[in-house]
Each structure stands twice: as structure tokens, then as C-alpha cells.
Amino acid sequence: MGVGERRGGPGLGAGGDADFTTPAELIGNPARSAMLLALLDGRALPMSMLASEAGVAPSTASAHLSRLVSGGLLRVRGQGRHRYYELASAEVVAALEALARLAPPRPVRSLRAGTRAHALRLARTCYDHVAGHLGVALMQALLEAGAVVGGDGRHDPRVARLDRLSAPGRDLDYRLTDAGWELFSRLGVVVPSGRRRLTAYCVDWTEQRHHLAGAAGSALLTRFEELDWVRRGAKGAPRALGVTDAGRLGFAEHFAIDTEALAA
Image (cartoon, rainbow, N blue to C red; front, side, top):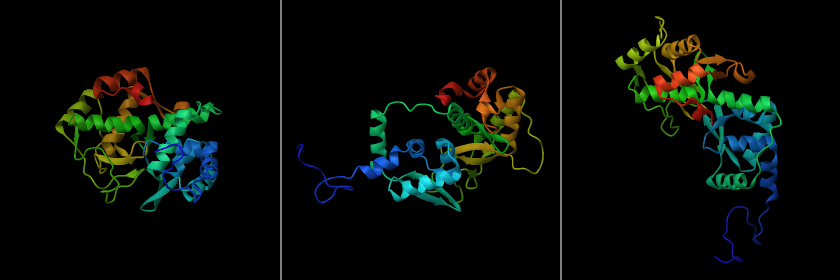
């Protein structure tokens, strides 16, 4: 194809001229660009999470998201009563990736906001168990070790019946095996008796995978805190969990999890 020739496609008028100003104005806003970049890895995220990524109030995030949807850069996926936002097409992904290669690093205007969002993605509490990158990695380690069985840890919205993002899972029945009980015993994890379900799970918004919940998930978090592997309130975020030096060693030894790689 020669320099003077163009492929037809969306955005090209009858004269072959594309109006770059509309998508450029949408992408160029700092809050909207932060939301778009948060979705660049293929996830669909709720408005609350995108507001946190952009460092804006929910009402402001709602207005930005409406513009991105009407401008064709985002689309909305509904699961139950909840709405999740994702990039609208492969063309949007390609455009953002091209701009990312051209753009200079974003200046950090609010170190507190930036580190808070990162800390929440890395490790946080979800009610009384571990979520975020660490929670998902922990679930995967338990599955690979045969300590937990009943699924593969992945959330596929195309086949999910009751499961939805950022919510307790209902489609699968995970179970703690003898190997799991042995692991708990070695770590000194005590699961209290009661009517609560032993091994439940949630669909984590961070990676759209499962993390362990239920009595087993709660007991693990309790033990991690007793061992001083994690501490609450990392980077000023009440729900964020900070991994200590002891935790980096402990997660590597007992679960083969490189927490420094998770934070990268």
C-alpha cells in the first residue's frame, strides 16, 4: 500500500480525513487516561476501582466513564446488578499501546494516591481474607500443591452462571484436601469450628481470578498476621496489606510466591 493510499475504516470521512480531536480529547484528560491504562491488560473493572485508579471521586469518575462510553473507547458489561467497564475494541487497545510507546512517564502528582492504589492491587483484605495479587497467587499455589481442589482459579464470564466480578463466588465447590490440612498444620493455622463454609472463594477484580475465602481463608489471614507476614494499613490505605521481610521469606518458602515480583 502506497503512502497516498489509505484503508477505509471507522473515523475516516468521505474525503479520507480522520478527526483525531475527539478521541485525543477523551484520552488526553489525566483521569480518563488513568482509567484507560488500568483497563489495558484486558480486565473489566467497576466504577469504584476505576475511581481509585484515577484518584477522583465516584461522581467525577461516573461522568468521565459516561464520556468514554459515548465516545466509543469503553463498553459496559453487566453482571447481575453490577456494571463493569472494559476497552471497547482491539483498535482502542492498539491506539493506547501506540500512545504509551510515544508518551513520556507520567509525573507523580500525588505519591499518596499512587502508592495507595498500587498497595490495594498488591494485597488487601476482602472482608476477613487476603485479596489482590497476593490473594490470587495464594489460591493458585494451593491449587498447584493439591491443597485445594474443585476448580482452576480462573473466572470466565462467558461460562459463569452466578459468578460475577468483585463478589463471592457461587459456581464452584472448592475443597480443602488432606494435603491442605497438612499445610495448615505445618503453618500453625487454626480453623475455628462453626457453621461457616470452610472453603469459599471470591472473584478478585485485580486479575479476574479467584481468591480463597470462607473459614479457611480467614484462618490463613489470621495466621499471617500472627507470624507478622502481613500488616494492615499499608501506604495509608486501611484495607491494604503490607508484606514484611518475614512475609517475603515465608510466602516464598511455603507457597513458592515471589512477593517482590507481584509488586513489580
